[in-house]
Length: 215
Image (tube, rainbow, N blue to C red; front, side, top):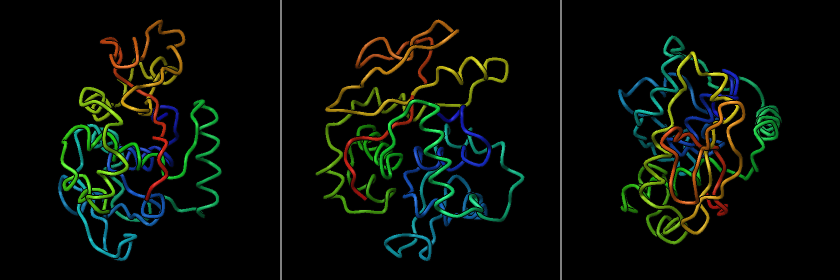
């Protein structure tokens, strides 16, 4: 999904899935917020749903997706209307054969971040919500190994970009299992070998949301 997105959508999808910002927060985000604090994305009080400033860690994978946009120092990430964003995102989901869910990128982030760290306070601080909500809605939906694979999704090498674009997958957790959705096309490689083990050949995954619709 990330590989299939254009330059207008790719940063938003990467930040949504790997930093957990709400859709409304994404659409308010400025490039200055991305680069102002080294290694973090700053969600200012005026742009946060909770009206509280927070710093969200920029993982290595997220940095990899955002590095091509280093020259963009100011201006909103999405310059159009929210309706236009939703239309473009819906079209991308359809192209990538991904089921679209409200704030699905954020819910996936919360699921995998909690599975990776096992600390509801840390995940809540990053996501900007309450530890009790993290524990109640995101516990036990993914394994640590699956979470490590989620946060290891990096841009394909230039010479393999087309091949990886056709088969890149991010899968959504369902009761600690992954639902295998598709095989790689011309690459001849599986994104997953079963519901819990990722293929060594490709740890890429389709970005789809968990079932919970919690903000």
